[in-house]
Length: 193
View 1 (cartoon, one colour):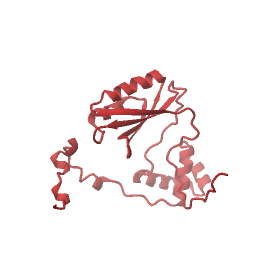
View 2 (view 1 turned 60 degrees about the vertical axis):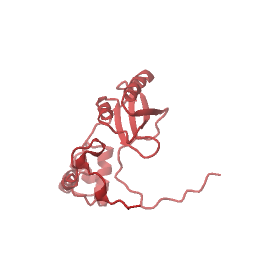
View 3 (view 1 turned 120 degrees about the horizontal axis):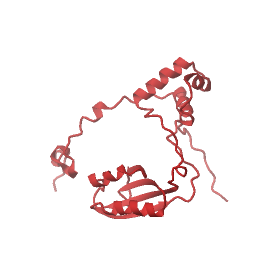
View 4 (view 1 turned 135 degrees about the vertical axis):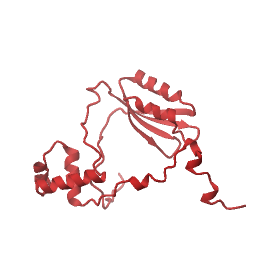
C-alpha cells in the first residue's frame, strides 16, 4: 500500500469541499501577535469592565500616565488584541429572554453556504464549528419557545442537516466576554466530601 503525501490530495484551488478560492495568502495579511505584558492585561481588564473610561481614569487604575495608556490601547487595537468596543445589551429588555444552545448534526462537515445564511437572523449570537457528535454549535436568543421552533425549522430546511439538539438555559450564573487574565497555576481542588 502506497503512503499518501500532501501532493496526492486535491488542493483548495481544485475546489475540494466547495472551496474554489486558494486561501494560502490569508496568513500573510494577519496582524503581528502582540506581546501582552502585565500592564496591557490590567488595561484590557479595566476596559472589559467599562470601556467608556477616559485614558486618565484608566491610567489611574493601572498605574500609568494617560498618554502611556493611550499609546498602549492604540497598539492593542492595531495588533488586533482589541477587536472593538461594544455595549452590553440586556436580552430580556430587548424581548429575547430565551437563551438556547443548538447543536447541529450534519452529513459531512456541515458548514455550507445555506447554513451560513442563518447568520442573518439577529437571534444568532454565535456560531462555532465544533468537534464531537455535532458539526456546528449555535448560541441563540429568542422571544419565546415558538420563536426557537421557527429558528429550528430554518436549520432543518438546510440540505445535509440530519438533526439538532437544543439546550435551553434556565439560569445564567456567568456570562462575560473574553478575559484579559491568564491562570498561571491551577489550584489543587480537593474532591467534595
